[in-house]
Image (cartoon, rainbow, N blue to C red):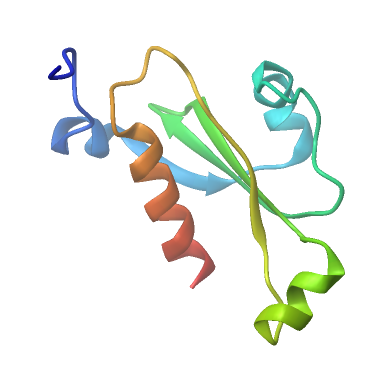
Length: 104
């Protein structure tokens, strides 16, 4: 079945930006996330802003210690991802891509 509804296209990208946020700014979104709480050690918190209003967030955290041994260096894990239901399809993909660019 083909998805219907708006798609996160050029017009949406022009209105959005991804920026660093603090814990207090994303707390309401964390509570809306199905886990409802912050991960153990947050390394980076980014918010998706639509016309300067927060509509999504992505949180990276430190994984278990064994992960660094397995991959041979410092690693982060994508611990939380949340986007408002009103946002169009593919918004999450855009947010993840922008987060990876920020990390690099």
